[in-house]
Length: 432
Length: 184
Picture 1 (cartoon, each protein chain N blue to C red):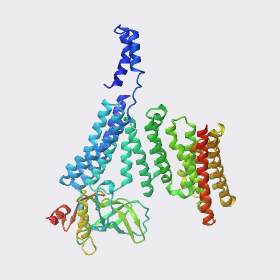
Picture 2: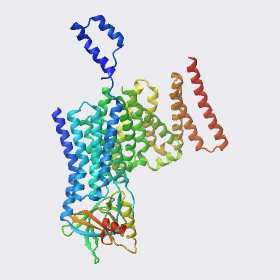
Picture 3: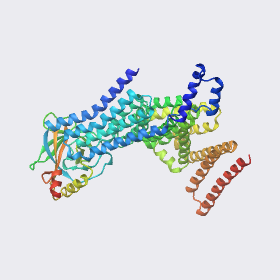
Picture 4: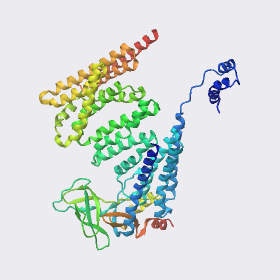
């Protein structure tokens, strides 16, 4: 028993000891003074969980290597039986953890991770024994689907952290093989309730934040690949809508900041990056060749997805407007405006005007972020504003016809402005 | 509630076991009761780090003449009717969109086609081997699969459209035996 546990035990016992007259109240008080305030309940140490999961990973891989080492010496039936070894071992560990150690996060996470890997290992070993030729997307999909229930049954987050990249990988592979990759959205949604429960309950914040990073990245990758067949027509409106939903939704939900951060970051910078692309003439030219209403009826899944994302973005936008969050409003306005521009097309809205609008939009956005930062004195926000403005200027100068010397001088001036503003803000902070 | 969870976990474990078991069952049936064919190989090779080391086989039989008026799509499932040439090697004599009622056939996917030929992805195109043996096999396989001398072939068992690779032969010897003799 460590000293801390001892003190905790003593403080628990003291009232009872006073009641049964072993100690009097003053002695009890003196004891409390001597040992100081009661130690806080120790959190489940993250280290233990990480070690358990890593240990499970290494053991699993080690077993596979041992099996592989004597592979050729074994007859086919022996190999076949051995293919089940990792799976059965994983199931035994998972079953035991579920029966005996259900309250231990480390056991459940480790066992679930080990079993998820064991499922993949077993299928791959059978595939090798029978020289089954590769259908990698199918293998990945079956593997992930056999693993994902572990998230709920063992209340384990690590399988979900492996599952999301897994189904994204299936989506990427499937796009090249012309599989129905729109199902990616359904697949990605499977662990969502578990994650949301973690976020709402405020437990295991670090894991919830990791899951938020993984989810936001995987959805962003999956969006492009799940719409691969009409990507040229849809990429701009789809990604703008997704990023707007990311940014607005997690600005309005009351979630821990660590959980919201990946969505806010990806949403804001993704929007800025796309808007920068929309200030290029060639991009608008490509839109003229691939009008948004061009694909027609066969692109209904893409239209549906776009409609869902866009309506969500507009709904969130109206809320942001009502609560006068101007920054969020400005970020959220991008998708509906750009989609209107795209629908108008170069016939009703000259490309030149679209370009001017995109430039003005970014200029305004950068200015607003910068002003917001200067008012609140937050250096990250000031730099974000400056970053948007300088990126805009940089892009303009790269695709303009100005001579190199002029460009060089302008870049130096932008850099100096950056440094100057940062210095001023720092000084102001010091003098306050 | 806890009992239900336990039941769900048990069902999941059974499903996890069922997938490799079903993979095994179908292929064991084919290996035991299928008819044996020999397929000539032609050279090629990639490397799939994900599923262990294997030798990639390029089969002569995977190229079929394009039947008159047959509409094809990428990755479409087709059925290749098998026949044996005078040297005793299998080739695909015809393609069908539906499984044929007579004769042995293989279910395959279309990977590429033009007016003359159709290239098929047959259900066996790799030979898995142990990590340190695979490069050796690959070397032996390549040196025997050149255009001028083609003594490399595989034996495959075929049953009800399924084909399972049995063994890779070089100079009429199973590859492990061939390598043992080369070394000794």
